[in-house]
Image (cartoon, rainbow, N blue to C red; front, side, top):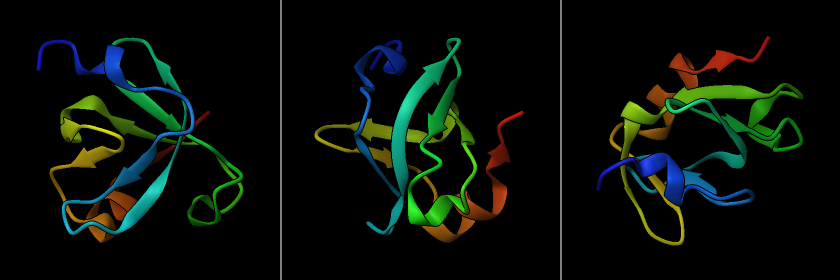
Length: 79
């Protein structure tokens, strides 16, 4: 899928490769980052960033190529 970021919409659920919840899309940042909502229980009250490179495919959800536990351990806090 060319330019996956254009298919990612606000409020889409982000799932790990294991099908577990990672977060909820707030918005995208540039051409290579997804910003997750800070109101999601997983986020700890902060916006979190994940790279578009982690996205495996997109349907009604954003599916990552790594398990939820790994994605959460490696995401970045938004500045």
